[in-house]
Length: 97
Image (cartoon, rainbow, N blue to C red; front, top):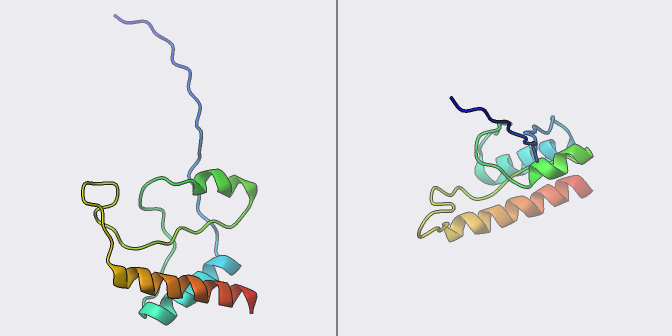
């Protein structure tokens, strides 16, 4: 029999940014450049967004599709980077117009 105590703390809680100005701007930009209709989800790994979300800021994670992320020979298609750059620009345009 093993008797033990464990002390631990959670350093970052999961989050889901509710629909709002940032989400709408991103969804509009993604649709414009890809033709895809998006939805909010929490799949994927962890990110620094979990530390920013508690401040009340809208947090959105949007990056290239990457099946090799954090693995040997990590890579991304350069066409996706070009398209992603256009999406980011459109998000800013949508927010600032």
